[in-house]
Image 1 (cartoon, rainbow over the protein chains, first blue to last red):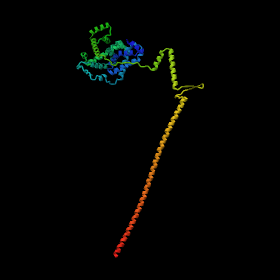
Image 2 (tube, each protein chain N blue to C red):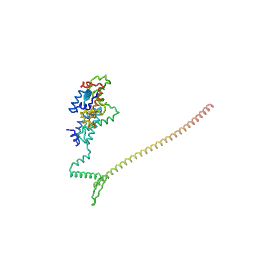
Image 3 (cartoon, one colour):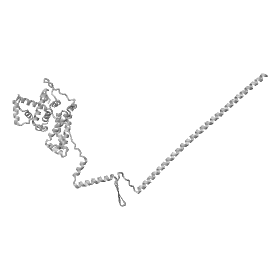
Image 4 (cartoon, helix red, strand yellow):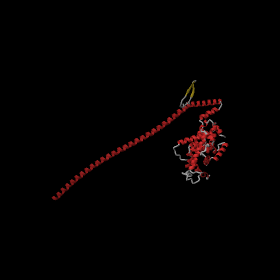
Length: 197
Length: 226
């Protein structure tokens, strides 16, 4: 059953259709938000708010074929609200408290003569990428996450962000370039990431 | 020297969103252009690194529940669902039930006395009794009153007996006190009399002693003279 069919059923009063829609989109939206805000608790909170907003406003959606774009728009706006609200706050990461025993801070190399002396495990790779993604501008980060992890087409991303396709590509290019420079500074070679895999 | 090739095209190539001709052309170009080749490799390298971060399960399992509609809306929907005559009958029945309920709440009473209707409404219920009920109620009241009177009289008698007992005890006590005081008085007088008698006897003894002393002196003088 397609999203459009589920939406129509929900609009006819079938709540189970909406739950099916949520089940379908929960994981991608959660991961999109999590990679954007880098905090499990906040990601869950925003994810929940996103679906509540969808539930409340779905009847106002004019073109149900654009549901996914609309959903991402809501998630992005909520992420931006949260980041604006918590600009000066320091989060206690759920990841740190939940997995405190397994958490090992990553020591990035400060100059070009030193390099990480070991192969990173999955958790460390995640923490490292989270950290690096947070260092780049939000508009570039969002595009990278949407393209890299959500596997959206450039046209879809442009639609979600209301920007021209070339702007999206440009942001992606500069975002990847910034990340590459950061990896280079930290002497994080491909081997460090892939040998463990 | 920088190549004039558009970086957006490189991005399209990396993410494979490019038509076949353009793809071929760009790949050919990359082979010959060191600047583009370097950029392409670096972007690919970054992309591959980013690929290592896997998606994880949200573990949220969000479930939405239907918000229950208010009762009046459900009733109105149900009414709307039935046909017009049935709806009319339902509305009429509901109105009648409400009317009867209201009348019962306000204790509606209608009575025909001598051909005239007597209608009354009251917030408090009115008690209506038959003649036999009145008689039995009166008898019951008399019986209760009698029992009450008997009980009161017996209580009065008990109280009177108790009062008499108290008075009798008080009288006896005062009489005993009087007797006691009289006895004490008598004893005092007896004591006084005895004291007087004692003094008199003492005087008599003293006089007797003087007389005997005089007699002894006289006798001794007489003896000496002889």
